[in-house]
Amino acid sequence: MSDTEHPSAIAFIGAGSIAESIMSGIIEKGITGPERIFAVNHQNDEQLAYLRRTYGIRASRMPEERDQAIRDAAIVILNMKPKDAAAAIADYRHLLRQDQLIVSVIAGLSIRTIQQLLGGAYPIVRTMPNTSSTIGLGATGVSFSAEVSPQWRETALELFRSIGEICVVDEDRLDIVTGVSGSGPAYIYYVMEAMMAAGVQGGLSEEAARTLTIQTVLGAAQMAKATNEAPAELRRKVTSPNGTTQAAIELLDAGEVAGHISRAVLRAAERAREIGQALAEQSLPSGKQV
Ligand SMILES: NC(=O)C1=CN([C@@H]2O[C@H](COP(=O)(O)OP(=O)(O)OC[C@H]3O[C@@H](n4cnc5c(N)ncnc54)[C@H](O)[C@@H]3O)[C@@H](O)[C@H]2O)C=CC1
Ligand SMILES: O=C(O)[C@@H]1CCC=N1
Image 1 (spheres, rainbow, N blue to C red):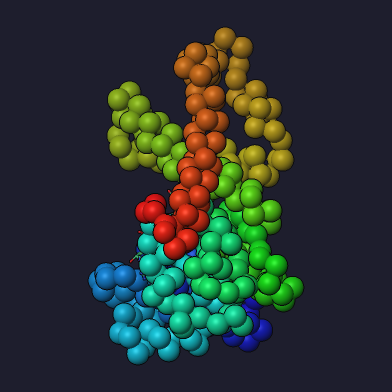
Image 2 (image 1 turned 120 degrees about the vertical axis):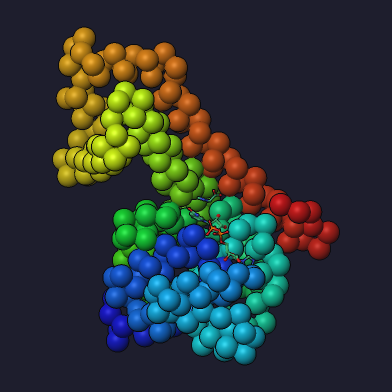
């Protein structure tokens, strides 16, 4: 998507980890010029200065500049924590219009609740990206409200496609997308931390343990993608009968690690649902806190 085809200005409300991942990815891919990107956060001016310096975007909490930028934006991306969503939407909804595309990356927050908080049938793209979007290797689940036109759908898909792989799913599947790929990078980092620590414990330098671990994870993911073989088959090829891998896997099996990982993914999905339910209740007049 070139700047001339889609000269849309994009406003990020919330300027933390995931906002930075998405904006850096779309700038890196040349989706839109950094001068067309605006970001605002709650109170961290240092973070906004960092984003201006690092990416050349516009970022400010000055009311005039902020309000104008949000009004001018064709696409507004909501990037705050679930607990802050209701207050943030209340702060900004007077600036938003139904001819803008509202994108949410907020875990659990349903399209219905967003529309309730906005007070109208705004076109909403609900997504679940991940932080690997920073380097164009994100994995994003996407679903649309009925109000999103085919043209807006394509624009949103191109936006997220430019920073990685996308899967369009029914909205009720976004919680399990959160469990698998939204939170997913953290599980892989968790395994990497343990592999590196063991490498050092076994006598490697930190640098060697880090290099070998990163390359191993990268190579395993690339192999799965490039060969299209099932992970179980790829694992079989590493595992010599009665060899080192078998010894390691037996230990993992004894600890029911695969079951724990599956349960962890499902627990993350369940947590997304809980967050969503609390937000839905909170959006009602006598709502409770998330
Ligand atoms: N970090 C991740 O890997 C992913 C996060 N998400 C979702 O993204 C959202 C943000 O997560 P992070 O970036 O990790 O959080 P973060 O804490 O790094 O950033 C949140 C941002 O929201 C801003 N904010 C809060 N209230 C605001 C308000 N009233 N007006 C303007 N800005 C406001 C904060 O100032 C901060 O810049 C969450 O809802 C999370 O579910 C989704 C996918 C992956
Ligand atoms: O931990 C969280 O709640 C967010 C959603 C997916 C990744 N980070």
